[in-house]
Length: 173
Image (cartoon, rainbow, N blue to C red; front, top):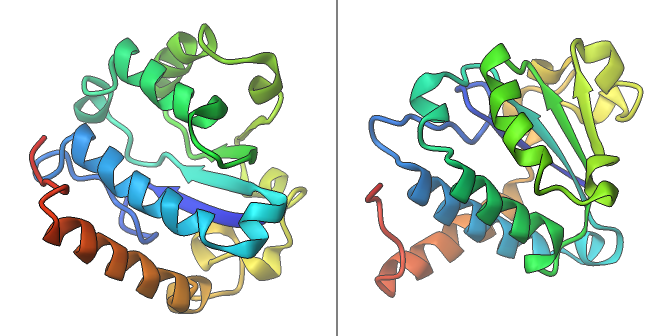
């Protein structure tokens, strides 16, 4: 299983600053990443595990994540895309996240609900992932440069430029 991380703060490659990027732009970026993941043979064969670091999630983020948007995201995760999500691991989740999750639960299939893991500390995350594979921000030994698959990032950047060049990408909220 391939491992992909998403972070709302600057420690990991993906950061969501609501003053310059709305939810729609974030979703477009995620779509590019998903299609990049689908090009990886390991992901096609075994699926992917997501580690979502929610440190920094605040009201500015939460107000953009409406029930309609939650539903849209969950349709994709639960079969709208040809990507098998084997697990979703959540860390550093603030209390405001549980309001979002409370709404999301209503739309989650039991199969996906069982794949969601909440980690109140990194030690419980390490029960699922070898620490040697993780960046320092997740309790592993790798600096961020070493933790990022440079070949994969190159593919994503080329794909993003391709989409931008076709006029199908937008920075609008």
